[in-house]
Structure formats: structure tokens, C-alpha cells
Image (tube, rainbow, N blue to C red; front, top):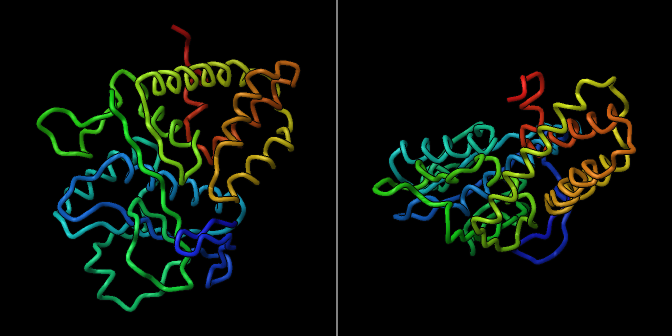
Length: 267
């Protein structure tokens, strides 16, 4: 896996200090400010990292680092992240905990903060781009973000899909139309997967799978994998069993719950 290191601007290979085990830190939030969509985006990027590495035989241990704040704020962040398909980190720490420890440095830090304070030269840095959403992605009135971040009228995973449709480091300006389109895409894909799941299984389309992983291994770029979902929708000539297994394989990384409607009675 390679990233463009935010500290050096150079393409760099991620080399775990321990063979087969990657240590990753997701560092989010600013002292005195509520968590926001950019922090959720960094958490989604960390989740994609874990899923991509584990699908290729590498274990990942993740640590979430947050500002010194009441624990319930971090738990609220993780609750919202869970609705976006993010697995809980192995460890939750505050910056005070990290600064005062002699633990082994992470192999990769993913953050929503830029610039980040200096860290070990051996640790690579990926900065998730900022997110602005002027319309419907917002906290409920009177509640503190991110516990109440909602996507009004849309599947919460539409927000995850919207993140995955952009390069990790690129800024995103989300609109209500973007989220409506992402929700509609998820609904179509889930209906299609539920329909073709009834057909005999077949081998996945190897070219699409490989292209998806090639993109993910370069700056955690999920856009090729998302484009493959669109291509599968259009390629009706492919055997249904092949289309189904390809959707399932890609969704192991994208985590959009494309198999959610399998076995459900329509209507």
C-alpha cells in the first residue's frame, strides 16, 4: 500500500514495523470544538484501510486519538461512526495519553487535522480533506455534534458512499442532491443484489476486483471500486452469479450493506 505522505509530499510505501501487522492511528477533533463531518470522514478512511488490509491478509490494529474531553463525547462520535459502518478502534486515547507515553509509533496516521504537530519521521501521514455540507447533514437543534449528525430522509450509509466517491484528500462540498443520489444508488444496488442472489453463484469478475484493490492500495482511493458497482449495474450480459459475487467481494471493503435486502419480501 502506498500513500502521498502529507508531511513530505512524496509517494511512500507503508512498511509495517512488524511483519503482517499494521499499526494505524486515526487522530480527529480540535480541543474546544465539537466533532464534525471531517472527523467522520477520517474514521471512514481508517475503516477502509482496515478492511482493505485484512482482505489481503494483513492485520491492522487501530487507535482513535481525540482531544482531552469527556468520554461521552468520544463515545458519541463512535456511535455515529458505527452508523456509517465503521468498526470500533482497538484503543481509544486522548492526546494527553499519547504525548505522555513511550509506545511504539504508528505506521500510519490518518487525520482530519491539518497541519498536524510533528511526529516520528518513520510514521506516514494521510490528511482527509475537509467536508462542508450546507444543507441536510447537520446536528439536530439544541444537540451537540456529532452525536446528532443526521442525514435527513436518507440512509446514513449514503454519507459513507458520498465520502467514498471522492479522493480521500480532496475537499468535499455535499449538497442535498448528492445525498439523495447516493441513497438512490444504494437502493438500486441492494434491489439488484437481492434479485440476482436467487441465481446460481459464479466466479467474481477478477478484473473489476483487481482494479478496485489497485485503487484502494493507492491513497485508499475507493473511487475505482465504486465505479465497478456502477459498471456491474450496467453489464447485464454478465452472468448473474458473477455479478452477485463481485458485488459481495467489493462490499467487503466498501461496507455499504449491499446484501441488506437479500431474502426480504418485496413491498
